[in-house]
Image (cartoon, rainbow, N blue to C red; front, top):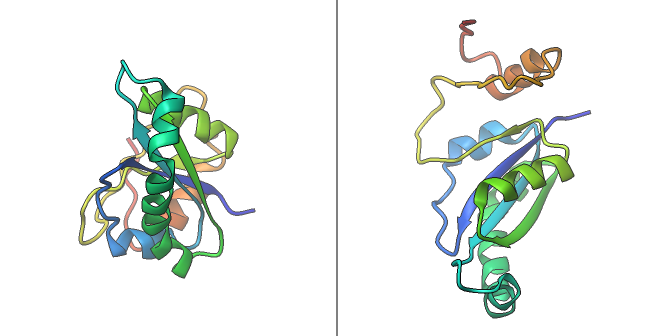
Length: 141
């Protein structure tokens, strides 16, 4: 079984995903989640009705490079006021092992892996190894 990683992006104007991240995540199952931030005074359903078509097209464009290089890519479009809550919910629903907040980069030199109190330590080394593909040394703190 391949681990699943969540890649959340902010809509309607997401940052482009660096090609090195697309390449390095290719062995994993990927869920690209588009979060469309809804202002406090706007009902979520009203925002969805108005912006869903455009947001879906943007999310599909962000996910396309992953589809070209990965065996398993899904997208989730979420309209809401709280990005963190949306990420937590999708992580559980999609059974994601990790979240990657993409940022512009030319390479992955270091990976910081925060370990929550309920971490599955048995899976952690294998998952980090898949991300690193033996190209990065490990430092245990």
